Image 1 (cartoon, rainbow, N blue to C red):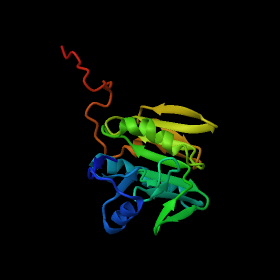
Image 2: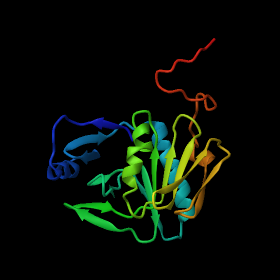
Image 3: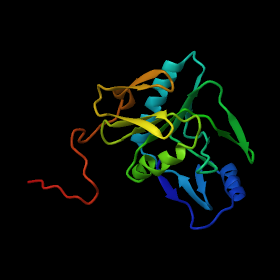
Image 4: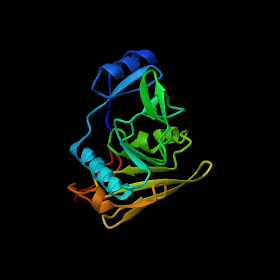
Length: 209
């Protein structure tokens, strides 16, 4: 999700919660700063919708839940909570109440769709923060501009296995939910301009001759 700075003003936690309760917009908060979770692209929303449909279809009849981006997820070292693009778990959801707002505390899978403005944060610091969630065992990162998915699976204390998938023919097995998703389903109705072109760091010019 694209994060836009709301105001250059310091909020208390109580003021932030009141802002959340009184607005239809979603905001995130950390150490007095508040920003709006707005500006998601059509492709971003399509990918999340596709993934949600694929997961719900496979998890039907099982004691599992899929939560979209309106669900608040408690992140102990990045309080009070975050809004992942999608989260999921099997078993009974553990819900805490924070100043009148419900917060999920035990997701096993967290999904973020990458965008230029948030990619570095999602891949690095945000992943570190999510690791403070005790139940968290899988992190799925999905690119919008090409078929590219990264899956991190927890192997042990401070040990995560990274897998990458770069073809629409690939499938991703999610241990946390015991199900398999196919990239062709994730990217249904997504048109890539240059799906096979390597990406270059910002500012690095290519010789087009």
